[in-house]
Length: 267
Length: 67
Image (cartoon, rainbow over all chains, first blue to last red):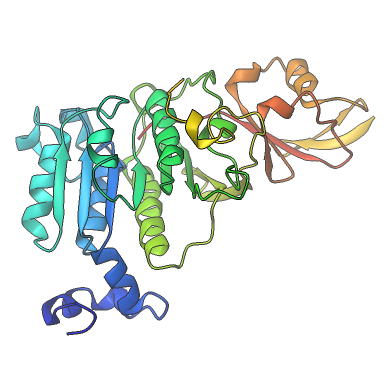
């Protein structure tokens, strides 16, 4: 036993700790971490599985949606017995049964301005993971991450086009973000025509983006992550990635405001 | 005329063209895309100020929100 890690845990998580710059420090960090996952669809149910299996202390799962038969090819935690049941509740029950080390709390609601405070105001949350499926929720999550100074790991996919980024809302002496936020990238009046419902998507393509999110969380918690404020774009058909710097918009009403102006949601 | 790359295609455009004009010339709605110049996102509020330079590598792409 070392650093609060039991002999059994040492064996169970040994492959993670064998990474030289992850080690016992990284494992301890994961086992002390609490994260919020918003959306338990294609992205979220995979991210939750990876993080729960890694030994994470607490996962807060937000989703008001229920399992539908059309979800099953890509939301592989679910099966036919889960149809009609709440996704957050099913995910929490299944992962809690597999991983006794962590605590998994289901919030069976769509995250909103009204209910996010039940978690973010009352508990220490280390990261927010955006696995949602619509533009307005993504803007709300971006705003919450900045308001609460909480690192944000975000991914989205539609058809063969995936996008991933991580923001770290630490602020400089002028109380502004060091890089652009989601609103700087896509202002609130941006027109979105692509969604999984209308354009389709392949399960493994969603899995690539979910794996990136889970990997980013583990790397961040263990001090291995450096790629903040970089938008990664994935072409699932061409098997290629590209990345660009997320420049901040000096006129952004979300991340360029002083902290006292960040409470209202405009999206 | 100057030569630039737009979404991996070489194109010749007039000098002193700003990004908003570039999109207008292609019939692309300003609120439907993000713009990258030389691997950096240019926020929409700056599109009317950025003058395209010779050999600029410009990309535009749509937002995706599915999950």
